[in-house]
Each structure stands twice: as structure tokens, then as C-alpha cells.
Length: 286
Image (tube, rainbow, N blue to C red; front, side, top):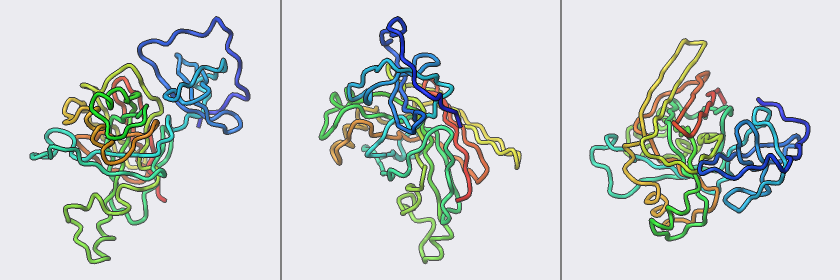
């Protein structure tokens, strides 16, 4: 865990710089535990007085990035995820998005551990691009939804298969809707994302690398793919979701992946998406 500087220091006027087309944002906790949003300028955090999508302005305070305790980069009211959203994963993909929701307890970020729920026999992970909503959306058009995309982040989408739990309850572990059963998608810290939000970039043809390592067992897995197989453009995803529920600034949408991998307690999962950064989480026993 990174240590905090004891105080935030005031920027001199000469250090303030104009925003570049590509920008990076985060949230962090100061020495008192208070959360702040910040724009990342190289190795320095330029503290904002509010969330960037709410018009947050630089306060003149700064902090060294290396000394900051980074938090999830937004505080989503809604955490939504897509299923079967990549070409080739389903030979007959539906013409509309298939999605599910996670609880707020699923929020996590880089460096956080993820406990395996006691009813889960198998836990899986996926490397995903995450959309960050920057404007309130309700019954939005594709154009309105496109304008509402604040930025993108790296995401680790986790889910489980409680097969023995189902058998104990007389259920068929192979039933078609097993992925929607309670507990499979809703585990604590099952939706790590961040630690940064990248703005001024796009989702197209981004290289994704997922690594799983366990020094105790010698396990090493690496998979590389890219985002060009995403079936639905981000604006269509947000527009369709907004016709079911209202999306608020800071909400997040995991856009799915083409492959998932089994992880066990003791494994460390590192996900890197080109241009969006790296996210690492360790899997632990509850």
C-alpha cells in the first residue's frame, strides 16, 4: 500500500498547465482519509474540488502520484456488465445487448484483494474495457450516449460457479441461466476497475493482456487479445441501457471479453489494456 504525504502542498501559478487532448483522472485518499478527485499530470496529482464530470476545477493543491493511496476512480451508483458481447464467443449473438448488474460492494481498484465466496467452487476472471458515464442518461439516443461517455478504464470482471451449492439444493449445475444465479456475479470486490480514467482516447483495437501468477504453485498464465471484436459500439451500449434504467455520472459499464480464466486463492491477476493502464488484484480465501 502506498503511503500518503502528510500534507497537500499548494501549486505555484507557474505549474498550472492547459489540459491536453488526452487526460487522465483518479480518486485518492489524503492523510485524513478524505477522498479527492484529481487530474494526473505526469507523476503529480492536481487536486480537483469535485468530480471532473461535475465541473471539478483544480484547487491549487497537488500530491505526488507515487505517494497517493488510489481509490476506485468513480463512485458508481450502477455497475453494469455485458455478456456475450464479443464476436466468436456466441455463434448466434442476440441483436440486442445482454447485461446484468452488480452490487455497489463489488467496487474495487488496483491493489485490492478479492475474497472467494464460500459457496463458489470456481472463480473466473475477464479483462474488460470499462465505460465511465459522464452525464445523466435516460432514454438516450446514440448521439446523446456518445456525448455522455466521459472516458475509459481497465476492468477485472469476476464471477463464480457454485456447482456443489446448486447440487445441495437440488438444482442442475448446467442450467442455461446459471450465470444469473445469486452470488455468481455479486461477490464483494467482484468489479475492480481503474485505477485511472483515460479521456481523449477510444476503445477501438486496444491490446488486452491478462496474466495470472501464483508463486506458491508456480502457476503462470498469460492471454493476449484485443477489443476489435466488440459487437456493440459504446454509444449503443449506453443508449440501450438508458432505456431500462437511468444512468448517472460516475456509473460504470464493463463491456465484456472474449475469454475467461479460472483463478484460485493465492493467485495474482494483472490486467493491462493498451492506453488505459494496469490493474492488479490478489485472490484470497474469505
